[in-house]
Length: 141
Image (cartoon, rainbow, N blue to C red):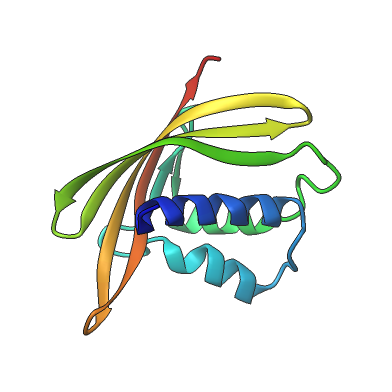
């Protein structure tokens, strides 16, 4: 698995843990696993949900932090990723496409997600991946 696919899997694993309250609701957990992975500048992160709602960086941070434990008690809640495809765009940019499956209260949904990831140099040879934009579309079974 390449670093971009690992990043996609890791972020969605965090979402499950956060929404099910499997990890403590601390700023450290939230910042380490989410805030530090998304771009806050040049351009700031944007999410377009499957219903067409566009969320800015600031709104998404607030909404996700407040969604802590929203799936607590739903033993069926999970997210898994399938069919990851990558296109290298150059200059450290990668266009990722993947299917995101969710099981919520025993109901399965599926969305096609397209994500723009950027590999950014922190210092010397040290880089990190940033999420720049995600666009999701509902898929039929």
